Length: 146
Image (cartoon, rainbow, N blue to C red):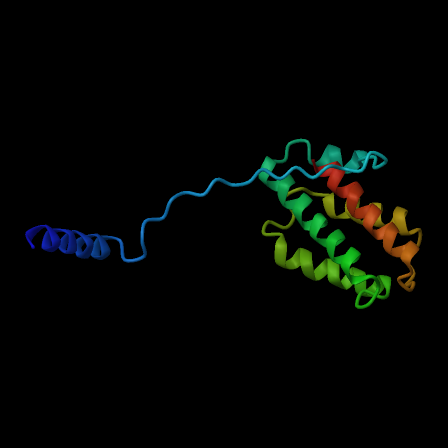
């Protein structure tokens, strides 16, 4: 009986000291995203990010990987014009980027990648070809930031 009381007391003490249980550290998985071999990094973006921290580069990569993922899943249903794409991109960047202006000229360099990929500043409908151009632009930015 004494052993049972001691075990119950130890469990009670343990639950009072650790009410949410013991949290063990979880190792972060290493995710390596291969870049398509035909994607050439943009030299301007590479130059602007040469002194960037690994965290900043990883943030840029993750933002544009997410945007490319959304474009692939959307298939032109919601992002059916380049105007809606631009709005989506602007809203995403406003929410995802914490230090605006940390790398001067990076925003213009990214915009030039999209302008070269799409080929126009005009509002055009999101055909499969135009969606692929936007995805390719995202991949160029990803390759440039890695």
